[in-house]
Length: 379
Image 1 (tube, rainbow, N blue to C red):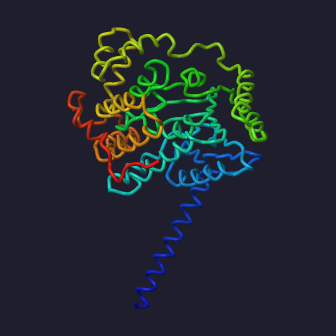
Image 2: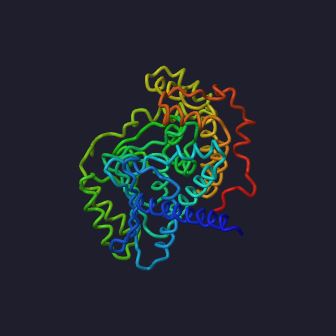
Image 3: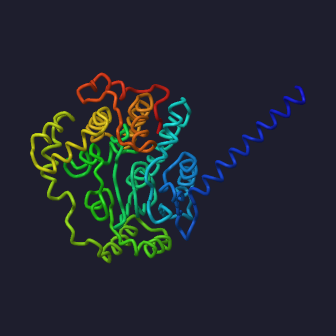
């Protein structure tokens, strides 16, 4: 080997080591993992990005979660977001679309490893408490909703807004959404409707509600618990919920519309739902029809079928299905166009292809749900 080539190879190796170290150190700064008392505490720490979840963060959280699950000194896991504005506003979608455009591995690695993490949370053997104090959307929902305990505050803002960016409510949305009351989950999935504060608990997305000013005291009590059962943790959360007074007597924001939602979203297709909304005549129905008209037609139909299938599937089966859908979206057009219109150029004028529900055929949908053979998600 020539001296020159040897020097170049060593330089490349050095660069790789530096990049790996930088990625690892950066992720370490972006998510803090610490033992406090008998608790493993995960703090998402990208406040300027509203704690958006990226692949290095996933790669830090997952092995530590598995380690704590086996560790006899760790009794409970608490996950929260830094900065006071967000728990986690979603996945780092811009990075994923950049990779997808050039065939980069992140386009499959991100979804695969995120869903594996979602499953680890959904099957966790110890109490797992997500403090969803602030914006909780998309990937942030995946980090919380499958855990046994989800604590909302008056600052919580929940949504699954994926149909607006040419995606679908993933991270196990096909599992938890159709299990909400009546047609509420389908309504939230198709429209991206936002729920705030106590409404997040009333919808069934959060298990408890605690005033934000009580969260620090609640956290301290949780980490001080010794070998708590799930019932012990529930007892602590319920005691804090009883002390919480913000919006205590306010009715559920959709209470007066639930009968309409159950009736109008009962149709056997997205076209049927749109027809129901247009014919209904109420201002609520008109608003929802208008909202759906702005969403990706492909996303709406994928989501409808995803939730219809997910209602009778296990979380694991749903995540396998959703991985197939994620890769179909990466092969398609609307995801890139939606991210461009909403997150990059922010002109909010996406040009969907196809542009109408009628043009999204059953055959096109069938291909999105097809198994990927050796590339399928394995849980």
